[in-house]
Amino acid sequence: MTAPIRRSAEGWDAVLAALPDAMRAEVRAAYAGPARHYHDGAHVGGIWATWRALGGDAGDRAILWAAAYHDLVYEIPAAKGWNEAESARRLARTGAALALDPVALAEAIGMIEATADHLAAAAARDRLFCDLDLSGLACDPAGFSENTGRVRREYAQVPEAEFRAGRRVFLAGLLAEPAIFRSGQVPAWWEAAARENIRREASGMPA
Image (cartoon, rainbow, N blue to C red; front, top):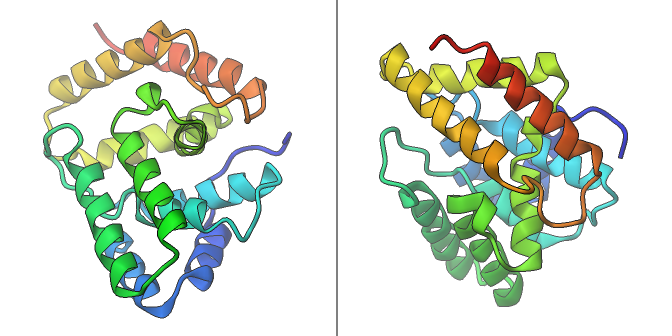
């Protein structure tokens, strides 16, 4: 994959089109909230578009459902892992009601739960999904800056100094890891691009 990583309205449309009617309604409503600036439909669509650009199977129900539901619940503030756990529970409930394939459903639920700590995911497919979710870190510089601004707007109620301190810790934590993308199934250039973006943002932050 050499194409740039992007948020994708087209990918979002493709995700919605592939979901059963009841899931589609639930997912569309959740991501349409007025406080959604980064964790919105275009983010979900970007994950799906990136998966497809990597040669991923359009019929992979686990990736599709995980992408659609992984940020279904996104409350700020929330305890660490709460949003992911609630999103996974919503998928489990809806999937059971629709009698979806239990193997793919369980895998998708596990992928969502793994995003509570992307860099601790152990299973190979969980790592892959976490890499897809973090792919925005490897955007071109303009896209990365736009994404940062979108995240800031989601935290509009957080004072600037507090947000900046938290962001600095987040970025430093990523740089401290031996690898951000850990599945071995995504292009090697993602790692270099992400680290360059992170260093650029961190170096430009006021003390």
